[in-house]
Image 1 (spheres, rainbow, N blue to C red):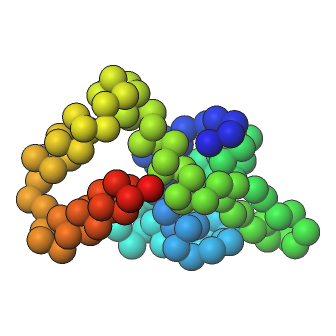
Image 2 (image 1 turned 30 degrees about the vertical axis):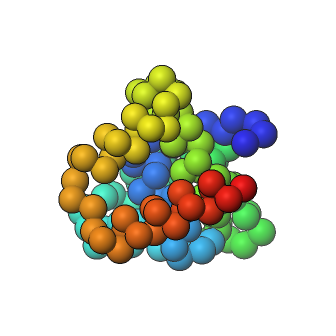
Amino acid sequence: LPTMSPKPTEAELNILRVLWSRGPSTVREIADTLNRDREVGYTTVLKLMQIMTEKGLLLRDESNRTHIYRPKFSEERTLQQLMKDLLDRAFGGSAQKLVMQALSAKKTSRKELDEIQKLIDSMKGE
């Protein structure tokens, strides 16, 4: 990852998840989507999205009366950055410790284990 972008908070990640799944959206659309899970005020979402724009997490299209927001970074890049940060801070950079902790933290399905095995096999082949 070239330049480090700011790390999103949990509330900011919720907004990013909506944008990654919906695509470019208005504050109202984001607030309506978030309200399906729990009550979140429009002004709270607006303020968070303004802060996220200032932090460089969101891009705002102001060409229409209603501003349209979109994530500056892809979901994959954001998750990779968060994972790298967690790996460094919590596991001293050890991928083995992180994976062992993740696998023992909750029941892993056979399908998930098969996917993990495929990834390991492909990485061994590189």
